[in-house]
Length: 186
Image (cartoon, rainbow, N blue to C red):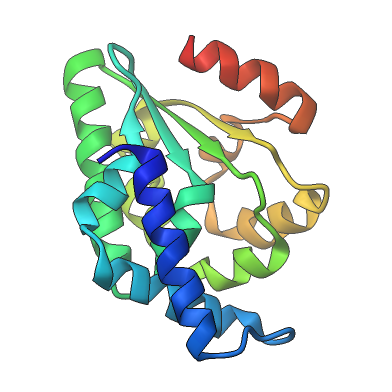
């Protein structure tokens, strides 16, 4: 299924969910996870995941699209998402001897950081363990479209990351991201 088609289906599911339940103005985190769980149960998990996390053809670069991730990621599929990410990391390591992670954080907020803390911790504990082959084979972690409150988010996440991984993070503000993402895919 094409990305646009899948996103249209997701939007219909979201609209249907909110037509049955009023959209919260405050305390939206739990409701957003409920919507995401509904999307996840209604659509093909593998297709959603492959649209969100993938290896850029003929490279060791793994791309993660938060703008899609947030539409279906929820506690019931966190393990599946991390296992899939590990599969891609292992693929890159076997074929290229290393890997890079490129994450589009467009629309990521402090509340999103709290909402997805569990999966972030799981990713870091499984994929970026201290002094492991994975943390050593990580070449760079590029973060695109970093939010204006990124320093706050970084302070929340820094204790979860190994110092060697922190040194490999390269942040791109919204303006830089346009050019950097274009170069990444072209």
